Length: 329
Ligand code: TXA
Ligand code: MG
View 1: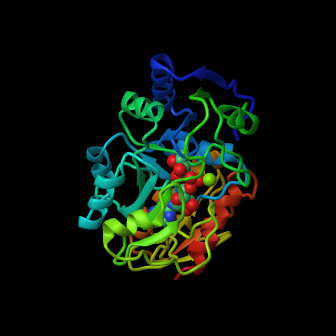
View 2 (view 1 turned 30 degrees about the vertical axis):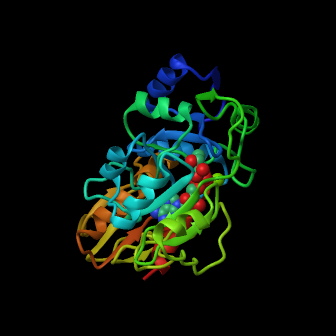
View 3 (view 1 turned 90 degrees about the horizontal axis):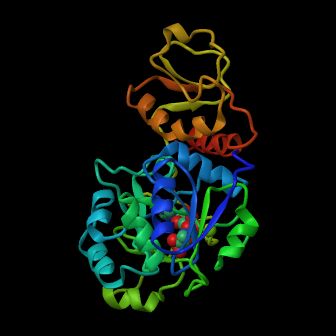
């Protein structure tokens, strides 16, 4: 993890928005106010920046993140909006509502931010400081709440500072936020589903839909929603090929997902080889994880052998996802 960073704190304004945009473009981490809670932002297209973001939050788990955009045109470059999603977006955006929709074919959001799912969570925040930063930056910004994992969500810049000082590049101080709880999350599936209650009341959403929102199958805590995809409840990204963990060698016909400098016996005969990080850098490995699994799976190998990945830093989250991929079939 990157620690010992010097965290700048700037009052909101034009200079701060431009500094935030520059920092995001350079792969840095910027905390900023939204109307719900302070978010910790990274460039949605930069997988390495997103890996640093998970690391900065501590106790990393690759929960999929919300992509924040400035307007509906930008949202539609990321996600596909059917009639109901469009109605909700047009009624409640900008505002404290997040919509989970299928990704577009050329969705620019990094696989790490969507945890390899085919869906993406999108929100247009109403806070003028968030709007200024998104416009100055130009692209989508993924942002979980700007707190250490397990702590309550921050409603003041001072809360962010207490949790994340030394771990992120910039905090834009826009004073106390208005709503104080996270956005309401609706999955725009066959039956629109309330994935997380939040700052927008369920009744107002149901009034627009003209029908009650479906309930999610499992009991959900605000920080640990099961990622859901249309038609596939509680699914995690799972390759079609069988995943074999802690592999020390490669069997004929298998693809190899390598880690670190060591060569695995049998790798010359592998169907394909990709190395998460030849130097053994866990942040780089996290950034590559879902994209490489997909790329190897696309070669239709007999199976995917995965070399051992250490449990420290982001390794814990990497191994968690690999274990799920291995049992998910
Ligand atoms: O108000 C908010 O929503 C704040 C501000 C910063 O926008 N953000 C926030 O993010 O609360 P976070 O990461 O703390 O919560 C996002 C939730 C997670 O529980 C995650 O599982 C869910 O959104 N989520 C993201 N993508 C999803 C997807 N494709 N399918 C289902 N759930 C998803
Ligand atoms: Mg949170």
